Length: 168
Picture 1 (spheres, rainbow, N blue to C red):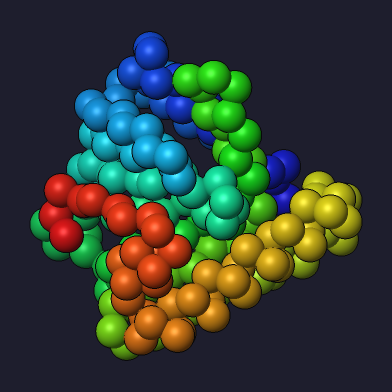
Picture 2: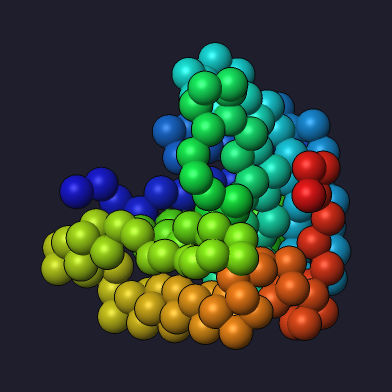
């Protein structure tokens, strides 16, 4: 079992340091009162050409729209990572809490990676407080999505978080 994945988003430097420590160029950052927008290419990735993400600290989530290469598409509209988000000025950090939610707009939302979460908690990779935050964030997301017919943008707009996307 791997330790929680950590990422850094350095707005002034226009970089994103991924969980493996690679520093990636970012095409666009946008800071809003409710979070941070990130858009960057996924160079040399076999399945994905780019990503757009929103870091939403109040909800403890990172919402991503993956841009798949032709023939690599997946049946999902948005991918939600359950994360802790900290901000130090214009540098943001996320710590992944293993749980993820896949949104199939208008149809369903599903929590995945419960097995990883349970193993991480069992091995002490997430302390009690982080484990509780992860459960709270994932269930808040599921409830909000279900209440809004699995429409991510409708749910977040109701919370005053109007997300903008290049493709949606």
